[in-house]
Image (cartoon, rainbow, N blue to C red; front, side, top):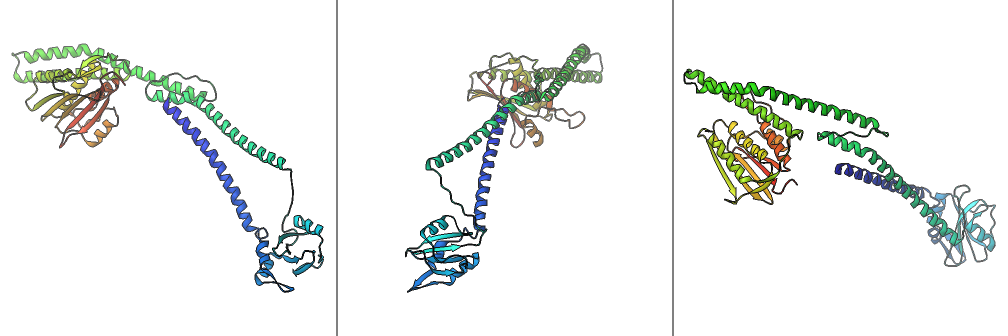
Length: 457
């Protein structure tokens, strides 16, 4: 279930990030619109304070410099300066219909509102005079409002709470929908993982995704039926071939030992016996790999001395009378001490035998074969190596990548690598271990197997 939960955690994080990104983009867009609008609004950008600085008094006369006139022309504005009594003492482009004297009430009115239809800006100068700049009607919107202080903060707080409530509701709905999707999809995703692992299980066919569950159930039933048919066929073939194969091996042995036959006939009997034994071994290997693949072979765990297993495997292989071109070497660490682990003795022995025989079969010209057994970090390590021709880099990558399919044959009569190594991998996996294939220098192959000494981890 960990990959499924990881998927939905990433989904929730992705949705939350999308919400945050959505809000951030909207805030930036709003700020961008206001900023662009402020730069575009030449009336809002007009500084009455800067304009007032360009109007100076020289004796009884008031003068506006070129900068002041330019500012007015750029905005089609007019300007005037009022003294403390409300009298206009200086004007520029002041409309004729406007009065030249204003009372205190008039000043208070147009400073907050409009001067007739003209929106104006007002600035109280340091010398006590009042600078006024007016703009064309219907070019600038000017409003003034006032509210109770407590009411203003209440509205502000309420707006913030409404905004946060909307964000919380959005997150809640997102998480709830994600949870509903997770609840509906988790069994399906787990079913897909089980199906890929060869362990199909029935799913409940209900809800909006019932059709997907039904399809997975059909696929699981089909694969189970196919696997059962394959296993039954292999068992049937193995059973049917056992009796005639035993007869072939028996008669071939008798012919091989019959001194009355010509030497050529006896040699042919030897070839028949060896090929029959090879066929018997292939059938046994096929049976074993099928049982391991479909968990039909129980792993009987008990305390096993890995060093003793390796030593017996080498001894029995030497007792079969191998040619002198094969040299065997056995070592253990620490020397003379048992290397204990929990496992199935028969399967572990088959694992070692397959590796040793693999080195012999694929190096017919002879080679140096070694096996080392050692204890390392609470693990029992088996290392089987040879200095033969090795295997090509592509097949080595396939093996280390976990590929269990049989390697294609290189040609007629050439032995296959795949089935024996596939059984080795299956035995290692059944014991919860690790299998690594390495190239030897300058040539050859080393297989390293790490098994936990105290059962499957």
